[in-house]
Image 1 (cartoon, rainbow over the protein chains, first blue to last red):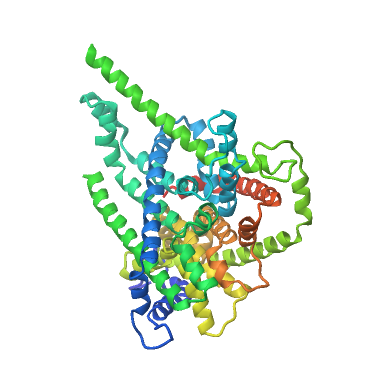
Image 2 (cartoon, rainbow over the protein chains, first blue to last red):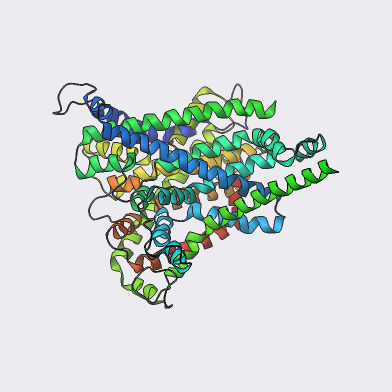
Length: 283
Length: 272
């Protein structure tokens, strides 16, 4: 026992097997991806030719911009609907919370292909939206909803919503209920109290939820390809197309690296905001 | 008087807006699942909603869909081995890094969590390049290895959280009573963190069973995986058999979810 770690601390060496697996199967492949992306078009000398090709091409830049913008739209819709849902959940009687939680959790664990398939049925020419609109006489011919930007944003918002709602619920439970009463007694109206007290106090949850939803939405290859269709190309589809169909591995590697860096940049911005907001929420 | 009335109206409008948006969110979350269940019981050959009539013939057709059986069996096997490997490696690693403030532990924790935010498709491509470079042909083994990297974070996260909630004095008490580390682990630590491990293993299994981005690159031609088979079927023609299969998956997932919620309090763990 002499000089050893306290008994409540397990042996750190237990982490070595998984660390080794990650070193070989995660870090090494990513390093190889980086190396391949720096290869010339004919396997020549090292260079940034593949990156120049991507960054000098308006089509590629459009795909990157479109992907990042898609994430913003989905995240905002998730926040707009997810925050009230989390708000209602923490105020609901205990008996209602169980069923509500099941409704929130089920989409998270249901296969993404199944969830996306549901949207094909809903948005299709003979789907529920078009049948309702035609039944009400609002439109004579079925609207094109599938393979449109709006349809994709709604479908992705549904697929990613649980990732927004869960951190928000967690965050809302931590807010001292007395604060809302205090703000009301001091004369702040409901809307003012919400925007000035509740929203700032739950900022850590909002940021955590936004991070998860955003990262999920921009990398959601299956939903993007099935609901977006062939007309709309986003970074995951672009990467897959170059790697699989065109077999252009160096360019696919460069796309993958650019996408990785973009996601990492977003993650670090959110993490920094999260640290700042936690300081603010606890002050 | 006027002020109070205004405040009452304001509170009312605020609550009305929040409740309407929340109900909209609930409908949005639930509707797709219900639509799939209803459409899967259609009697017609199209995915028209609402269906013109009801029958279970597509579920019967599912019994003969051997391509889907084959793909489902592959996916179940890969998910099983991935979960086994992830639980063994992940629980050991969690014991090593939990409750530790050293730089190594924090770096390892970030490393083990990073597959959760990185685009899985980029990792899939990188793995294919890696296995090609070291001369290992893609097979069921490479699939399990690739899946383990992207699914083990769920085990680590849930086990570390369970360990963090454990009272450390319990381990000290066990030691002071003369129990060795292994005995303390088996009789004190493990029973306390078991629900966390089971919840993590369950999410890990579901993530592997549903994985497309990594499987797309790491499977060989003989290893057809269920989500990929379904995705390709949907890209081609809209087959009602897929609706019946979706119905089966929804019912199975709901049953497992209820079971897990009952025994591990899954929803509390996912909130963190």
